[in-house]
Length: 232
Image (cartoon, rainbow, N blue to C red):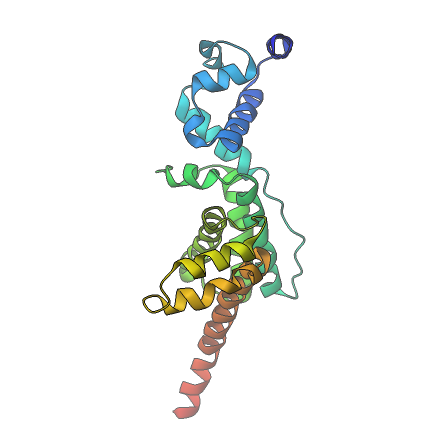
């Protein structure tokens, strides 16, 4: 441990190194663990040394946000298939949130709108894909928020419901046996199928519902003028 601390102290302290250490603390210990003192210990310096690179804790958290956004893996998009592009972008967002699950809490604490290229870059890709589907500009943000809410909510559900546990079939059976089938018939009937709900397949199922619903809405809007004209 002593050698590790000495090695950290010898490394040149930079803003990037401070932000990376803070992100590592958040990923491993949770957002509540991120403090100036904890991050200083992570890089092997006194807390006061951090203020040469970050103004305060809020600046530190903003650095984490930008660092995570910069990791967004922009997918290769096919201009001929906007709906498949939507699937690719949604999965890229989910992968990013799964890699840094405590980012959800950090985003929830952000009160100001994003104002950086790192934050807007991924948003620009998502909005451009939705626009290519035919979503009008005045509806882009509501649609974007609907998909974003689904993605973030699903990642939270993955954490809370324990997807990926060693024996989900046994967990489902245990829940089914623990509830009163007379009072909770739907819960009792559904839980035995918990093991069949692969998280990737379930995410894709919900995403397909959203994309199909959006496609139906857009096609109906496109046909509306033609129907009105023929009726006249």
